[in-house]
Length: 320
Image (cartoon, rainbow, N blue to C red):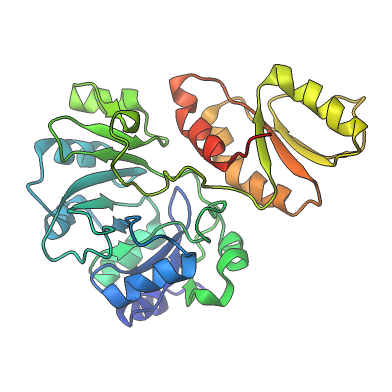
């Protein structure tokens, strides 16, 4: 039985609670409790220098966690919160540095999920909540994914059903002279430009900034994942079939009827990026259960609307 009261009590007592959001499930702890936050790093196996996103109940709560908040932050919060946008701002002195990975900035967002918003309002504070999985592995989009990944290491799972967006939030830094997209998500650069009335640069121009979910290897299944363009895909599959290699495939096309049974699983994905994103981690979790030698994924298009998905797949992939 779902209990917001039980989850709130556990958070107040320094415990870990897995929470649903519209993006992925988060592993939450009281953001003002350094001992509780340390448990997140320990359970995930996450580097201490990797900052955590603090989830807050509403945009007004920004003043409790950040200082020198620019007008652009209020504009973006008004346009996209609750929703899949994380803002990087100057850290309020009361925020423990363990939450920020030792940095003087803080990552904030208001999640768009009724259960978690109710929890945050009842809790009366903010929770640090990275994805509820082992560091570097596939993010969870169902309560069952959390249970499989973390087991008894999490004290309670607030089951809010499958995540509706399926990939992590867009992250925008507002601490410098101009806004920077540090991680692509479902809120596009175009949507951000429309609200701010100015262009944004991206993390490629600021490689030294430490950001959640942007390590070189991330979002990875246990099986090797190879990212191939559609021309190379069929040729490589035929070579592997000759070598008796068992493969699972994610493609935009239906499985060719002539292909060998050595293709254990063939998943035809949607051509619309929002529906592809919604299914991506769910399908990777499913394929990780197959006894194949590797997972092969057809590269999505290079257009702006696919940037977030391409980013996740590139970090999950291994070279051939």
